[in-house]
Length: 325
Ligand code: ASP
Image (cartoon, rainbow, N blue to C red; front, top):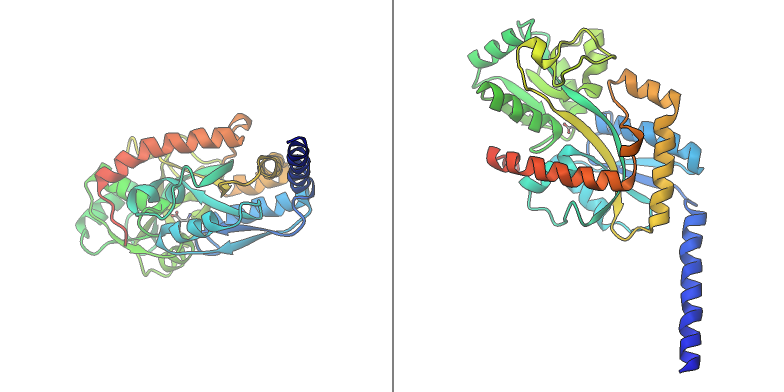
């Protein structure tokens, strides 16, 4: 009995040592961030800004892998099935990590199969159109969309993506009907908007910003009560005549369930450091992205926020009857 006990104790000591060693040596190779949408889009851009700066803190590269399809649910699934060692991170947002759970029958549970790492910057949506649309104000755009109900097209990143939820929300508030054109991300949707293949996108501000500035597309309103510092010329929903059109698209990082807590803590600390860096903040601000307050940047805060968003959005999305493609 004594020997058994001693052997068990020795095994425990070895195990504790191994866990400690994981945290001390982590990361000793590159870390993959799975972005579930196209390269060049808003999720991809934010993941790359974060990854570049997290590399400076942790000394290893953060490689973005774009695993697209089914509004991001395929890429999230890949991350859920990865080894829980901190070397695979799931990047996602209100669409992938909340809405998709109410739309698709997912082979994973968004709240229990992933561990939260950190809440990332958020941005409002912006209603944008191709320049050939004759409207100059939101009121004129809504009138034009109404007159062209059965032909007007709205680009999205798939049923349940941020751009789709925002489009459905706009429909609910205005009584409009839109024809959706799904893409693997809003980067290719934006390319088609610029070239006039589709009519509008209710897009993440960070995706559209550059094209708005260069005149490649036209912006009508943002889904917020205050104007964006990065584009103060775009009116708020209230100013443009669509009161209550408020939606903030937030993003976050998760790791597979079972990832050691101290590895999560290291990733969290690197992300927090990145969001405090003035050079990173400048890049984020230029894209209209807002860093969450420091007390919202803990894994626990993301867990609470994630749960609250599921409770808030699932009934709304289920009622809207959004179907998978
Ligand atoms: N965030 C997505 C992307 O990066 C688009 C979306 O959710 O609308 O393409």
